[in-house]
Length: 145
Image 1 (cartoon, rainbow, N blue to C red):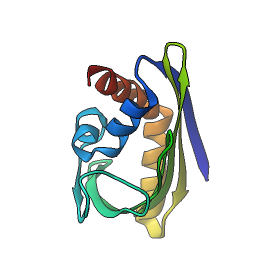
Image 2: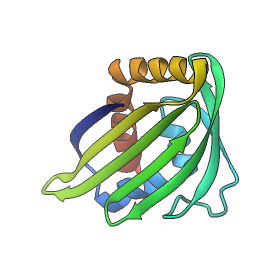
Image 3: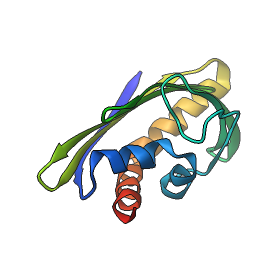
Image 4: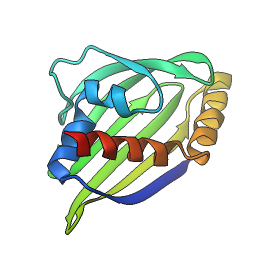
């Protein structure tokens, strides 16, 4: 398992950031990878939420079962299970100039050849700065709200 992290300070309150993190429509605007969400029973992600997320990874269609563990008090933590397993966490803390965002993504291999390829592709994207890009775009989205 490999874990990728980034930390930055942004000009937005933790509540605005959490709103942008838990709103699927806002996520589509800032996420560097396009995706669709199916089966979401509520308009926003909340603790206990389950959904199906589909998109493309390394040019191949992929799907993930999403489970939200936490979505309040300055924290979003979720798990996505598919060809790779992802543990994602955003911790948000108020600062004098806005918020500090600490984001982490842990990548675990799924089963079979597709799991190995998806793990390598995911780690390559994260190693090329995808998490930094996502957090930067998310911060701009929250600041515009």
